[in-house]
Length: 205
Image 1: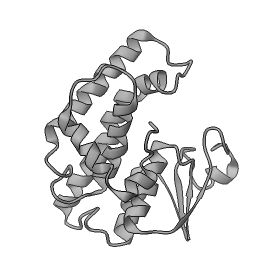
Image 2: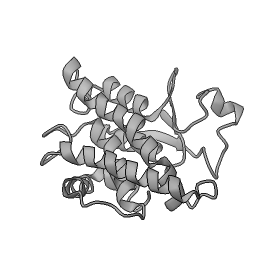
Image 3: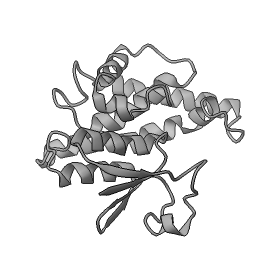
Image 4: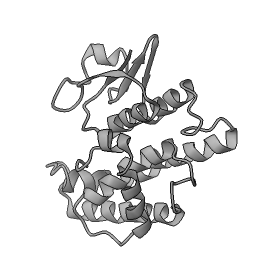
């Protein structure tokens, strides 16, 4: 059986759990990370030298990085709806997953830790304002690309899982936001999926 290492409140662990639910996979989850078992533990580092949650163990396969884990699971189980087999379709899904990691996450990091986590290390007002502005700018990019159903059209994909937890975090973090009606409607569609209700972290940023 799959082992997923990481606390369920983590945005990156939730992506993996959501993917498992969409595919219909059984797994065992183990609590690791902040407030539970430290990722500096040698047992964890043996599976994930990056010392970040989540980590996945699937037989002889040990894997880290949430987006890589989601792609691995979809590909292994033949879920071409979640991750197309053709190079062009797959690249469209992966570019949005990469955008989430490379552009969206760095934008929100400082503001989120200041405003949602009340981190004492994130109290600089200027940096909070800059991060919030950058976050809104990236969300406006997403808004401009959203259609009437899912991010890439009629088919729900891994891109929607990665962006779904991100849209939730933006909506729940308390700061001034522009009106983004497409993003809000998109999130309401996500909230009707059973896998989101189980693992999207409803009410948890």
